[in-house]
Length: 382
Image (cartoon, rainbow, N blue to C red; front, side, top):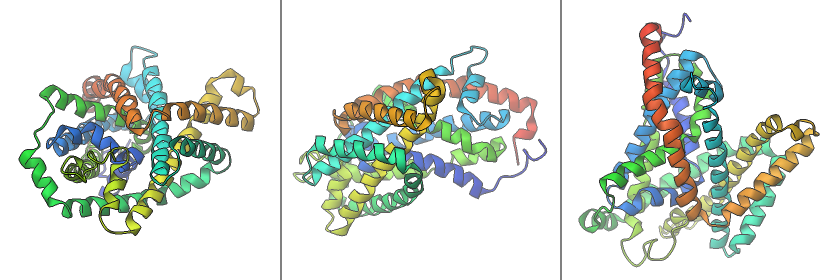
């Protein structure tokens, strides 16, 4: 209790913000499909909508981090039980949300990898089957290796998309000018707000990771610093500016040419640097696979602990059955295509996230945190 009021270093706050950024900068973000579905199609409001969605999520995560630190809870079950108290069992709502969003996220990985294979001449369904088999094998025999390699893949993908974003903006100024001169916003005020809240809602999938890592922040001021490091807002807004320049601005735009599934790859192929789309495609495919493997691997102990038949079964056998069943379910979902997974799967998860996480933490969570801080001012921090 004696050190909760001490100043927490900016580096520590930045490391927690990086956990958030790492969760956000996955395949859906890197492909460009996610930003197109949520923001770019609505015109020049897109960068504003993107930035506001991340700022809103920052407010939510701030309350999450404060509650975790002031209660000392490192498990999302404990935090949500505290949030919904005295109404017991409501924390199961987050459990439902989490399972559904993980299935949607892994479906997006399979579908995205299938789209990548298709772009290089491999039939879409064949690509999905290949990725499914590879994922099952890696879950059973190489999950730890994938977890270690995912960090490297994330760095490569971030460098690639950083180059693509900057080059795409610099190389197409006339597209940006056209957007802001001619392209009206098609987002009504209600749609504008709904898209912001919905995006924040499905991005709340990062909450368990934030709860598990943010206890080092110790106090309110450190939590506020971590939540206001705007890496996500800047990166997402920058991506929407680049995508706007190529969205519907001529015969070679990705809307006109039908390259809406993985638009960032199409744009990379137009920039005249031969190695760039190849490096990006390889890194993106590995990013899809690593996300799928680590997500399914993370579900295995949950099912092993919660389902009686698995508790009584040999651990390796139960792990294989769970990995196989989850992969087959995900493969079935992924056949609808990356665009539909994001358009419908993420969309409905976003609505559930608004109800289960966003609104409760911005209302009940804020009130409970404020009451605790008033009674324990040492947790405010320096």
